[in-house]
Amino acid sequence: MELKNILAGLENLKVKGDINISIDSVTSDSRKIKENGMFVCIEGFEVDGHNYIEDAINKGASTIVFQEDKIDVVKKLNIPENVTIVSAPDTRLALAIIGCNFYKNPSRKFKLIGITGTKGKTTTTFMIKKILEKQGKKVGLIGTIAIYIGDKKIEDSDRTTPESIRLQEIFSKMVEEKVDVVVMEVSSQSLKLNRVAGCDFDIGVFTNFSQDHISAKEHVDMQDYFNSKLKLFDMCKIGYVNADDLYGVKVKKLAKCEIETYGIDNFANLLAKDITITNSYVDFKAKLGDRNERVKTCIPGRFSVYNSLAAICVTKKLGVGAEEIKEGLVEVRVPGRSELVDNKKDLTIMIDYAHSPESLENILSAVKEYTRGRVISVFGCGGDRDTSKRPLMGAISGRIADYTIITSDNPRTEKPEEITKEIEEGMKKTKGKYEVIVDRREAIKQAISKANKKDIVVLAGKGHETYQEINGHKNDFDERIIVREIIDEMLEEENIQNLNKKKK
Image: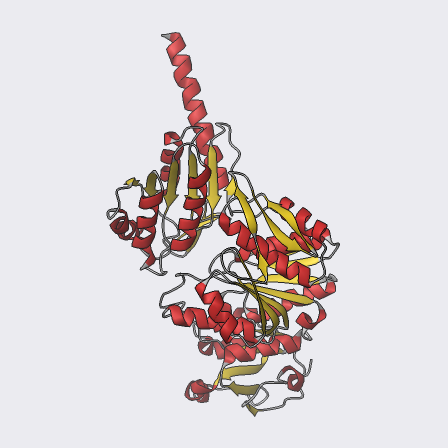
């Protein structure tokens, strides 16, 4: 594609060189540069792409796009005359629009649904996907767990919303695969950093809003976090928001698009009534078409009602009938979200991604309602993330769970012992029984050893993740596998003990 077409729609650019040249690839990673490629310099939190301009040129880059406030850096470089250089006020925004142009605006060729909010994004996307597939649609999904085209998993995700150029490449592949609808999680970071700029959203959803992602590398405060999420509703044609969430009400007032609401307690366009919650499902009545219908989903908890309502709003808008909606919701399963692990001891062991104060409170409160025995909570907090939530989560588990084991999550570059101490500060303010076992595998083993068949063990925080990140390295850590390994070891030990008793 010609450079002048790739730059279409970008304002306040300054170009030195030929804009009629052909560009064969676009990247913000200098290691991926190819001949006749474009290198867009991004100043990240840890790496500044402007430091790799010469490397990119040596690998064949014919065009460099740089941040205009880095002009002094660029002037010091020995850039060949045949390389076109472009300065942009914001290279993150430029990369997003360039990606849309280079891949011929793929998001205009299918229906695009964006889901934002602190919690519920992943479950809601899976619900929408399943319902639409019941209608016979081919659906793409992009989110925290993985990227799917229909039933085929394309790749696991390393972030909720991909970098802008990669996102457009994925969209382009989905167009090739003749996808009808794409449903995606839209993180606050992706909105703040313009990863989804230029995307043609048809529908946006705001699930809820609570404390999370407040740190030097994410959002400076809650207002910045909320303002970032609000951007989605400047980009879509219609939005659906949770009427029971205070910030959802704010979205309705501030959004530039048409807004409709769903909820349980407050007036809304779509209401859930007569709710029943058990240890294996939730059901309720909601208006589908001309009458109220009984709706059921096998993901227990009040939060599942909200996620289901959001999915109903979106799929009704897209013309799905009541029977397909009901069938989709009852069949949907989401990895790492209220996921029960089958095991040889027949213990109730649940894996859930809850990693914020409100999500931990929601999952523990939900299981507390229907568990006949004790709630045993195992959780930690991620390193290099919002530190203020650590004592809050300690207090929540101490207040709700019958027993808590504080442990490590993804410590990243922090010392896990320091993180657990901060969690413990909140725990000490409650009367909750607890212990600290920093090694997460050992913490899980201790929880299982304490549990009986009436209890529930909640392993919170990691959900679908199959690794534990320590000092920049992702170590294999799939809690489903670990639970089964621990139980196999326990059963083997019991067999040995029984044999020894018989010998005596």
